[in-house]
Image (cartoon, rainbow, N blue to C red; front, side, top):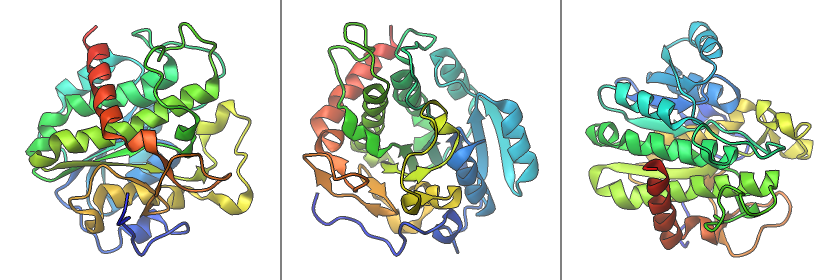
Length: 302
């Protein structure tokens, strides 16, 4: 993609630096997985800037601890992305306009093939399908906000796999923790592409991002972070790109793009060198995005 979007921010920027001078008073936000890791920092930064933030999480107690220890207007609502009934209950209960949806929660490199409540491979079902159902279920309240933003937290691991449409749930092929994770993260990028195409005329835009390497509970199945120390980020740095896409006026009206280190990434036809930047061509392909949206809709209706 030519004319890549750049900002004054970069690798070392923090969430607070990105939101300096931004007033989110009157804005309402949801952060999935907002009680831990970069989700917690995203929640804190948005609330500090004045937004009313809802932490959507399986761990309600952890969410309450964040709400009680963080200044600002924060509430906690239970949500299990691995159970579409839980997602449906969450979206049905939401009232009033929604300005910011940060699809942040996720699981990574689950070592053995596990299934969601509806029988889908756990990483695809949680990281992508649960967020797809949440996003679609909240469409009307996003549209009611006039100007709304969706943030889809992906990973450079999306280079590990496109969507394997003939066997998304690893029924007929050997399960691989990393290709399963990569497929789910490709889905997260495609979600932003197609949501923007479908809903841009209603004032809704969506972008995706790679937050970088941050030591959090996400790595519990991998034995810890393997990235060289000089390429690692703190949680405030890891949340910077998320809050940039969620609330910075620098990105007003921008959608369907993939960012890392607070700047748009180039589209690549081959994986970058180790720890390099870029987004796979398949992950921002409009036809692929439309296809996955239709497939996901079909999965929700079963």
